[in-house]
Length: 433
Image (cartoon, rainbow, N blue to C red; front, side, top):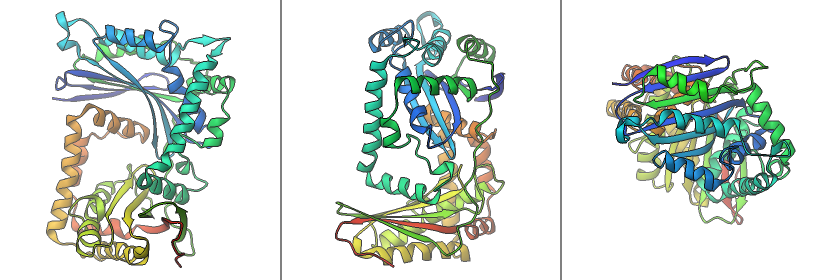
């Protein structure tokens, strides 16, 4: 039995506590939510990695490892995530649940205290971050940004989203950009960190067997030193514009030394996003179209017509976008694009077999229900819900998906508008009109 409690622990600090005896570990999280902005994205992304280098009581990685070893080999890792227009930076930690410690030794309180120390009490030098730590982690951040291009499939999706959302917060990468990252100084990072602590909404998370009262007390004590002199404002999700720009979809091409083309298409969802009442229908529609191995894109574009090596669709549910990703031969650009769009037209026209609808619906339901079996996926779900200010759990959403009809799927498809086509081609590839 899983019981979820969501409440404000203190002004601007929200707690999601998932009480369950299903897992042998407990999961703790502390995440700062702030609006994605080009000017601050790299600064904010660097903060948790520098914080993870040491605290006042454990000033280096060796001392931190020793502290975690004392907690039966627990772990705390820095996180930088993006939920639409919101940047989420902080930590998640995994520890042995108290139920399984020798003599039921308490782990929750010291684990929460260590999490609080990492966020609030970093080791300092001249009143700010240690320059050595900043310089080392800054170089790592620049390397991570540069390395994004190495995964061409993910890079093409990322580039497409930047094109569709140009000028909008959702178009900013969660790590920022290379030039901004390279220009970070220790003093500038300290100022950004202090600003985050003062103004960002804080999302705390717990999943384990401890009763709610104990979880509240442990986290309240661990985060009692959070600055309170300023009001914390929720970094609300801003969906992208509901409709594509007039003049038809844009085509953007980029040439690299690649042997396989990457074709990505970005659709605006007509305003449908995670908080929309019609969101379950959009989930099923995406599964019918390209979200499963029995989808129209997979069975037709890939299997039947052999126009691509892979083809799938996914939702950016906090932004109001659907993205199609495919890998193709360079000379199959026009044919692959035409068939991908033809399958979308089939969805809009209601040319969907009953087995397609049933299979898609079951696939979405299965994915939602298996979320309950993985602590990391549970935390990811509830962080997203917190960002969107929603309270619906995976099982509740699954029940709404069960009720989705064919007409609702078709209605969702008809709201989609193609905004941008992005093609990553070889340097010898020809331009396309």
